[in-house]
Image (tube, rainbow, N blue to C red; front, side, top):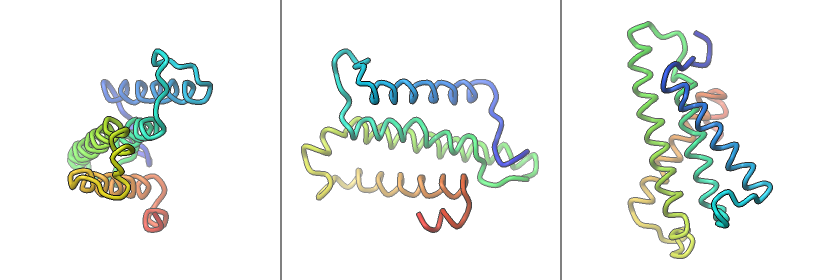
Length: 141
C-alpha cells in the first residue's frame, strides 16, 4: 500500500460522485450558467459546499499512517470514515447557515455551537493537510 488508499465499492463511487458534483459547481460558478434555476449561490455557500465535497475525500484517500498491519488498516479506515463524515456534516451545517451567518454577523458574535464546529472544522483541515503534505506544512497551517 502506497501513500494513498485504494477505495472500492460504494466508497469509490462516493469519491467519483463528489468529484463530479464539485466540477459541476465550479463550472456553474465560473461561467454563471445558473444551474440552480436562476438562483446564484452566495459565496459562503459555494465555499462551504466545496469544503464539504473535497475535505472528506482527503480522509478517505489518505490514511492516517502508511504501512499499518492488516488488522489496523480496517480500524484506521473506520476512524478516517468518521472524520470524513464529521467534516462533511460540519461543512453542510455552515453551508446551510451561510446566509444567516452573513446577515446576523457571525464574524463578530457567533452562536456557541457554530464556534465549536468552526474549531473542529479547522482541526480537521489541519489534519488533512498534515496527511496529504506532511508534518511541516501541518505545523505551519
